[in-house]
Image 1 (cartoon, rainbow, N blue to C red):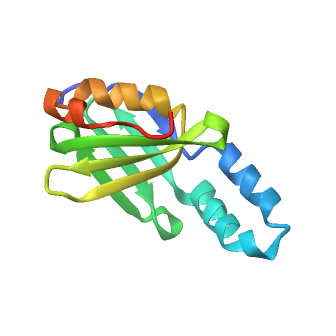
Image 2 (tube, rainbow, N blue to C red; image 1 turned 90 degrees about the vertical axis):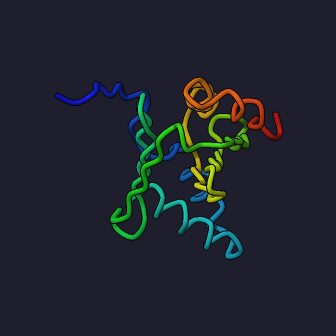
Length: 130
């Protein structure tokens, strides 16, 4: 029997990201950002559990990345959408980085992740623009 895994968040990016980018699409300049928001809304999914962070994305949601907390060296957040959602950059011990865009309740997600990573990694991470 496997180890129990409690799910903290399972879902897609914040709907506000899509709404704001759809409103900005009325100007030709913001159409690429709108297309990105539509693709994120359709195929990007986050699953944050007591054991790992899983991100499913890419074209038609075919790519999946799993990170266990012991591999994280730093987590940084940036508020977006008047603070209703935010972007998160998770840096691994090998130097690679995973970006999570338009994360709903990003402050609570950050706190949840921060509780599970090593104490030295907690001291390095933080929030920008807070």
